[in-house]
Image (cartoon, rainbow, N blue to C red; front, side):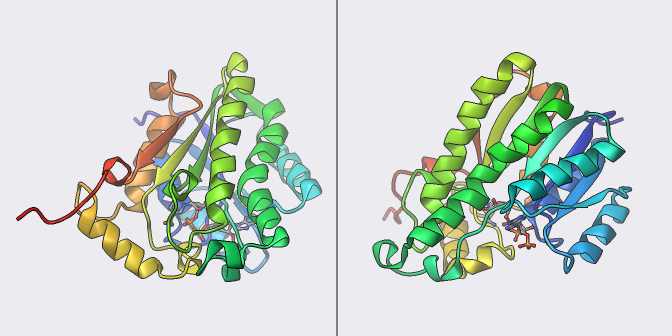
Length: 261
Ligand code: NAP
């Protein structure tokens, strides 16, 4: 028996078995949740279908969050499978690679800024709006963010403001949907080697730095994030909403690190 028995969860953002969303899906499945998945392009469809099948799911729905009609269509398709559902995992982000390296002020463009905010932040609000009529009492919405929202991090550049916008969106959605019993939270994960992360210049160095400095002296894993996501998606977290929960091995709380003689 798991603490998510009887819950239905929609998972977006599985691109591979390294994706944070894959770690979340595994933990939700382990705790008894029934899963449905989205995929962005036909190219990814077979891979996501295979991952879904391994987790006893046959529901795989196309969803490209750059287009509102596409989002509406995805939830209409979900409704053909489920009348209601309980958990929505948003694990989607994008910014042009050219803007994820070097000087922020030199690399940022109007188009890149807009795209990063639309795909990585607006999409969460837009998915919440489409999900709302189908959400059960005690439903949970969860998204993924990063420290670059509140501190500058080399090369993260335009994704920083986009994640700050996402975290603010979490607070507004939580206040808005709370009276209906719907909770909304974010997990701020430490760096993890995934396809999206590989787009940030110098990411290998970032991983090495964090592993050597963070309190637990290792990088977090998709299982670490998945376990926290399972808890936040469950009724065990009934009192938590509008929060950004750090799963970063303590890195955020370090004021300074240096070798003490
Ligand atoms: P990932 O495996 O590459 O997942 C990113 C997902 O976003 C992919 O499935 C990608 O689909 C999807 N996506 C991008 N544009 C989309 C669009 N227009 N419509 C629908 N889906 C779209 O990388 P990840 O690291 O697990 O990222 C998941 C989330 O965690 C992101 O929000 C990321 O910022 C956040 N995060 C990551 C880290 C880290 O270090 N990895 C740390 C903190 C937070 P395609 O592959 O088809 O483009």
